[in-house]
Length: 413
Image: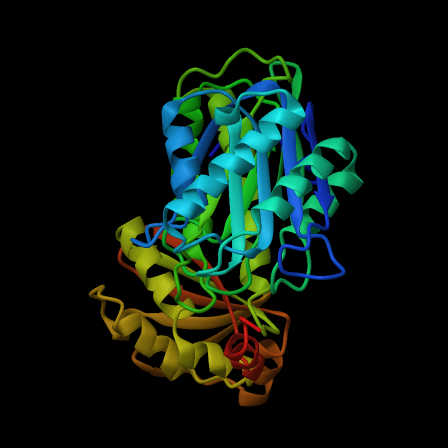
């Protein structure tokens, strides 16, 4: 969007000035690993967020949505893994309040400045005594170093195979600003808001409505463009906190160089976290990237790209390194977008290698052996080139393996 130089740095949610994090083993469901995390800023934060479009919303989603809408300053986020606090009725909502009250008591902040998050099994009540004890332990172990941020990213994992975090810096009018984030997500991932849990922190000074404008737009380009299994979670949450400690002039409008610089940095963080989640889908061995180019509208380009990454047959073919382009063409064809198959080219892409596999309505002259080698890569890129306009979109997913079924056949146990 902008031309600002954004530099990737090590770290996650503690990279931005004034943010600290902690993790603890509260034994919510897991034994022998951390399962609670906290993010904290002594300086009040403006907040923005997006939440699941699933009609069945978990208690933390309702709690956070209402707090973000209130426009009140936020100070902390408390997250647990293992139990989702979804489909838990009034008791589940009460536990959100009690969790916030526990954090308020430990940190000496208002309870309505505490956001909460949960991920894990649906339909079970949280062990609130362990949650409250965990909150007290978290408050005592807060740290601003990279290690504390990384430990928090690990604590919110469920079936994830690795932690997901990233950070970057950029300059606005001589001030250095930082954005960092962490996320979790491996299963029950489908583009319909954002996916599972993601938390982004920045020391930028920005008004809440301006931050929300940026976040809502960025979600459509990043988290909304990934899918693992077509299931939209009850707990999907993206929260962005900005505490202003970079002391830049407050960004008060969704336009201009400062806004564009912040937008670009937030986009880079959200895109990276989204790709990390897509590539770590349950049982996955490969990240699938689908680029659609040459459409007449962005909406159509996004619909086509999503259709391919959501195709179980395409995902299975990629797992088997089978260059079955018919499955890709089929997924494009049922997406609900009109196009001429005779004026479409499909490619497999790897760096500078661009292999044409379908053109002029039929198979291109390509080597099956070479195509198979491209599909054996950890990242498989599919390019669909149309000639209807200049709109483009990218979506990310993963292959479908035997292990996905194994993981989800006994998830509750």
